[in-house]
Amino acid sequence: MNKKGHNTYFYLLYKMLLAFCSLEAMQILFHVANSHLFRPESFGEWAGVLWGNVVFGLASVAMVLLPFAVLMLLPMQIRWKRWYRILTEVLYVVPVLFLLVARAADSAYYQYTYRMLSNEIFTYLGNSGPMDKMIPHFMVNYWYAFVFGLAIIIAFLIVNHRIRLAKRNPNTVMTNELIGLGTGLLLVWFLMRGGFGHFLQLEDAAHYCQPKNIPLVNNSGYNIVRTLMRPQLEPHEYMPQAEADALFSPLSSPLPAPEVSDSSAVDTLPRQLPNVVLIIVESFGQEYTGIYNHQPGADTRTPFLDSLARFSTVYQGRSNGKRSIEGITAINTGIPTWMYVPFVNCTYRTDSIQGIPTVLGRHGYHTAFFHGSHNGVMDFDKVCARIGYDEYLGKNEFEADPKSRPEDFDGVWGIYDEPFLQYVVRHTSTFREPFLTTVFTVTSHDPFPIPEQYKDRFLEGLHPILKCVEYMDNALRKFFDEARRQPWFDNTIFIITGDHSGPGFTREFLNYDGGYRIPMVVFDARNPQGHVSQRIVQQTDILPSLVDWLGLDDRTLAFGQSVMQSPDRGWQIYFGNDYFVMSSNAPADPSKTNFTLLCGDREEGTPENIRFLKAVVQQYFHHVMNNQLIAQ
Image 1: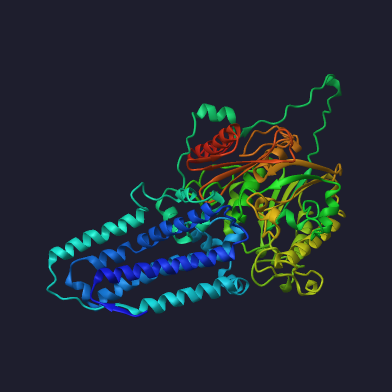
Image 2 (image 1 turned 90 degrees about the vertical axis):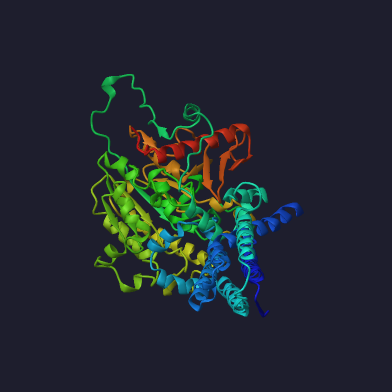
């Protein structure tokens, strides 16, 4: 293609079409790379996806190129100055590259988050760790996104270079110029707003397809810009507040103390509270385990955890998000992220909050958070300090330990799980009892490294993460072997779960229910008995449940429920691409799951479940926006 002419309007048309076609090529790359996650169910939905791509694609291009269009249409002779033409070319190329790069990045990233890039990406890049070391690994591991994305970008730049505008006749009639300016801007505005109706909103993508397929319609660049343009939180008022309070309250009271008929029988000695060890495994999905994976012929990557589960209570675990920063916060504070920006990074991050260490600290617990990654990554150290952890021990503290070795560092992300978990045991044994030890592992994270001595023992299989999970399980076995030798072991409750699930491989774990399934295993060394519960337990259930397990008399605030106060029916809520989904145990058969959806004016589910989901969502935004996140 080689277009050179004097007509500014055709020049703008060619440039807009080039940007649109390049973006659509990236849309195809995104769909091919993530085709295992999306299944439009009818020809009508496919047609909706295609038309939605046109609407959102044109709106995206018009939105980012509005400054370029304005400058090119202004009826001034300065338009033909060299510096002005360079400026307008920059205002064209840079925004289009932004759209293309964002979509190419999501082609690889989306499978882990189930959410398109948004305005939070700028915060994430600033505190997510050593990106300079991670980017080369991303380029190798996700070569398809890099190679084909780069090819589309190069093709765009080549074609763009061949579209040129020659200087027009200086005697052009000003009236015609003004008409062209007005008509051109009206057309760009029409495309940007998505037609004659209301201004195109993110949730409008659900009008073209099922909400789970929204990423096939919308695109990452548009998502980033639109989330930057609107408040991070807006009230969700579905019903009078008194009605929402009646349906769900995040405030929970402790279980009533057991009645004692003979007051003389009351033990006057202080009760010995158990220790708590909370183990959060990076990217830990149910599919990798034997205790949850019921696929015919499927093997397990967690033989130790499977054996431990025979003496534990096993729940149907669910995460409240798909990113570590969301999962760690939900587990520790009972506050999920039901918005694009992680709660700890949003406008209301300065709200007064409490968490597990806050509650346990009031009862004399020494509290410590261990994380083998770089100190300060995702601001975990600051969050831990806010919610009451006495200590934060990361890579820096590990490397100061006399038994640490240089080869314990994986070279990119942090300390390998085996040496770090051994460090956790050693350091925990120095604590006074009772204590809360929370540890967050790192090895089962992209780029999925394992120590050299295990590379022939633990093999990848379907995905590199599987060798890391098997390595982590072996490290967990050694952790328990060492912990059993410690005097505190027999008076300790161990909770093993994940921050979020990792990549799925079979149909059961590739849908929007399976993609949030994580292990939830509770091993009580004081009474090691096995039990499998069908109850859904989400991450935000851990705080109120732990208070009841320990027999504490504290009120808590959490957007979940104690398993002891609701033993048969649980629920989980997650936020997708501008929609909320609730999974809940079916009343008649807890082994079956009901699903409820809220997406703008689109609602799916039973009337009772829809009202309950609306109440919980309304309570979340009400409490966050009014700084009411501490139990009074």
